[in-house]
Image 1: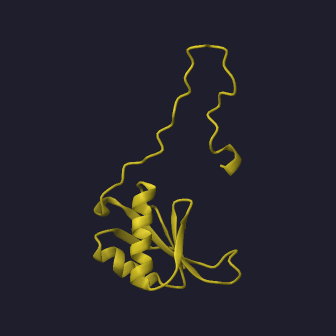
Image 2: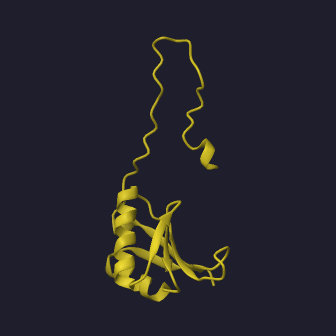
Length: 113
């Protein structure tokens, strides 16, 4: 979905005086670590040849995703960010990220080549 259509509800205008637009609930319930099914992969596509480690499959709120990202960045000693529900860690840190996630109780698998 493109960014320009992200905040549209589908109703443009209503003549009904009692109309109240429905608010979508975007806050998602965070699953416990033992129920998370994370995929850890290495990627360098469209990054100018720089290698990054991606963590996909996190189910939960943005705050919890940010907390996990901060934990991984701190323990790996490198930079990173979150984007589109994925955690991006700079560098090829797959082994280190796998160890950290397993110690924290997450179910994680290596994906990709």
